[in-house]
Image (cartoon, rainbow, N blue to C red; front, side, top):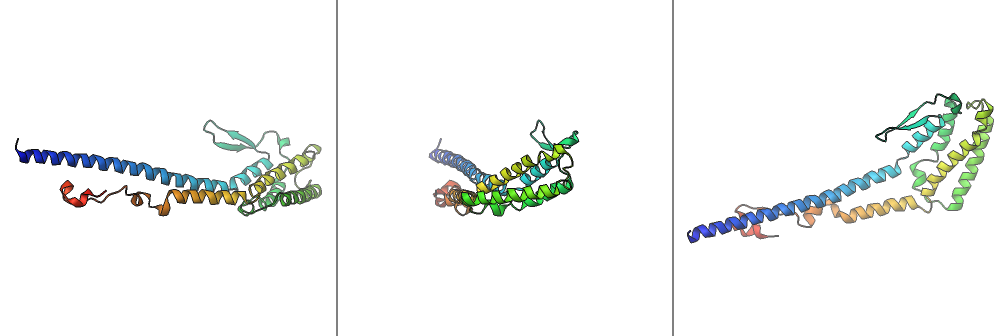
Length: 219
């Protein structure tokens, strides 16, 4: 074997090693970006889930209608009308009346506000009294046309108040807003400017000439 052949083999070996190194770097870059951007997507989904109250309102409406919650083997939730009509204490008018009131309190404006504990108690106290008066005056029009249905109006009011209280507790001291702000700061710190691979040099320009071109020796 001539010196020229040996040199060529050595260069081929070095070129192969360089390609293997490039492959490893590219894999690391892919893992890093998938972790960063995957985390961003998860954070985004979490924020949307935190602010989305439509599913809560939908569940409340079904429960007010007396629907029975069913969960299948795939954990899909469905609602069924009960066969026992005595479980339905409100008619469509009653359900809509309660939902109109509830919707004023269960919204993003509520959970992204800042409330003190005593103010939350005042709101719930006033709402409880007003709901009791509305139901007392309109109970027949709302579908409570039997003694059995009338006897359940107190637990109905408590259920509504407790649900609304949970929403206001998320805004206690601005907790929900601070939580979302912290999540955003963490996400931005993990991916400054959305250019993680380029910033940390996980991608490298390749020029013509292979290993023999000094411009390809930069890391």
